[in-house]
Length: 249
Image (cartoon, rainbow, N blue to C red; front, side, top):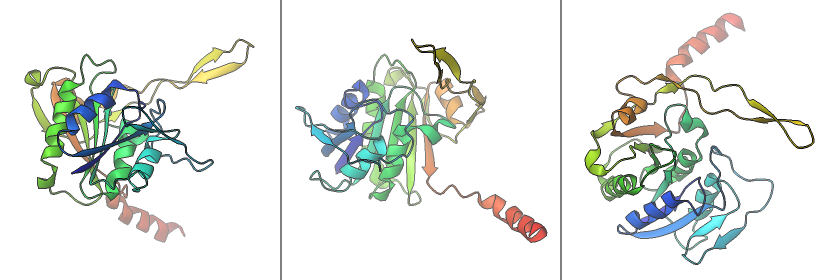
């Protein structure tokens, strides 16, 4: 198996190294990651300038672009490998509910939907993990068995793992996305010259963490696996929109 590994925390992130160690046991690995932290870059591609690629002493490649850029370049074959699967992570911090809209970790996996097997985004349940080994073992087990998985084309797996030892997991749940409340208002600050600047506030609290959601699973020290599909069409609303058009236009 040929595995393309990326992340959004940057090429020096410890979660990336832990993931590489775990997946190197399963096949050939190509690592292409942003040259710095690009969290919340979502699905953006860099189109206003050319991308620079640098190979590090450990063999990892870094790109001065987004996680999606990394998969776009790494998956093209220009670095000597056309992957079977893309694995993105291990992210420092969960990607739950509405987070998947913004997450660079999830976006990189979405870009990997073009390849032969489902792409995987994997995140730690803690923003300051005590260890990445539990998440790395989960990633290895999923990838090792991915060929037996039968899901719709263009589906990715969003995996969130409790920050604890594997033997302390309470189980593995297949989940749906929960939902968050709106984020707090932007935080005003002043630069040294007195100009007002704004920090984007943190994510809102969970509004839907009922049983069956990714939030609930992580609260219960369970691994959460949520199948995500790139097709964002709201099929249930198509008839309503059609009726509205007939009445209004």
